[in-house]
Length: 562
Image 1: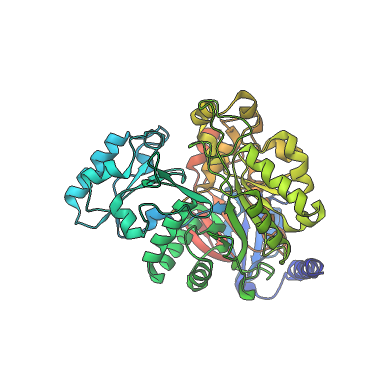
Image 2: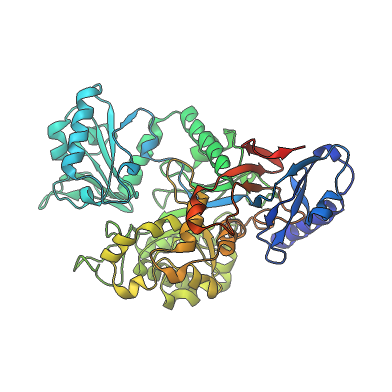
């Protein structure tokens, strides 16, 4: 009933917008002389777009759009530049431990990626220099890779020897693996024999309950919540605002963010207060089943053309194959006897699913971080036991990452109407995948092409942490697909996944995601023709102009505006 009403409302808006060829001529902008990709599969290509107020009112040839010019209409000569719908980052994390403003960052992941990173001894040397130069009590943080993660010598006791009076945090660049020293444990309120939290664990000294300083999964998320709690509302709000401004500069008109560590009520309050130039979806990230992802009516995603919405509940069901905590059907190729594990038992997954079924579908959408093939199996089996495919299709459940959604599960995923949110930048992890996985897993790794061919909805998210993603890098990896070349997409398919399908993944396809009359005027003008340039030139593309809701929110100054 509600869905039919909204569809009728959109249809009426489109009719009125298409007819609005005269009138508010001081509120009209015509983009012409361009290469326009609409993401609307009924009409993919055009030369120009007409915007009036917050809406697109026409898309067509130069002659067609210029015929709608009025006395005070603003004209934008694209100079044959490419114009596409604004990108919609379907999976992003603006906040992380590295966002804490009173910590000293000893290095950055960019210092060593894509290698395995510094050794533990090299990290200790960094920490030692930091402790010698920073005041006692200052948080010292460093990014680490698999060299440190896999070194059994990485414990708080070793760190204590060189920095006993400074809290130290070592965080894996991929988000799964955190090590802290004793001082950090004391400040964060973690006892020597702290019980394992919901969804997480602490590594222990063999034969005891004493924590070694290694935090896994939801134990890490609890530490993120500690840091969020140490930041003022003004600091967190400024973080969101800076993120949004940076996203606009990259060509994003929408982001769907999961503020890991920020409790839902505070999260939504900060989003409402923040001055955000782009559209912003706040997704709940509970740390226990007792926490709810409540959506106040003023942030409901059912409101037409809303700039700020809240919806969905995100759960991290497993880790990743990098640290071998993603649950696999068989042992890891390089670690006999190791298959990973679930963070949440099937009973907890069932509780989350039943809760989603009892709410409004657009507001209670379930989102599951899913990497291992056995993790996918568990989620789909639980869904099948809880409700019918028809019921699930209404909720559009989301598989975040979908690293190993296997071919024998495609039909189930399609029938349930699940969306797979892929993060193409993960496709760069070729060496790690080749080391960890078996040939038959590699043959089905990071699916995109196969999913589309089977009628499964695929959207794209950057999975960036702390700073906006780069949509052009994601498009590049979606096209070359280095981990599994048979799964590569065309540029047209990748842009649709990053615009139209990303909007559908948040129940917003009626308002945005394509350029057509009656839709929101969310668009980006690109510095390069990503549809025809050499593939290796795609990542250096820039946003020349970004428009959101009919308002220019980023302008490089290189376009001719009349």
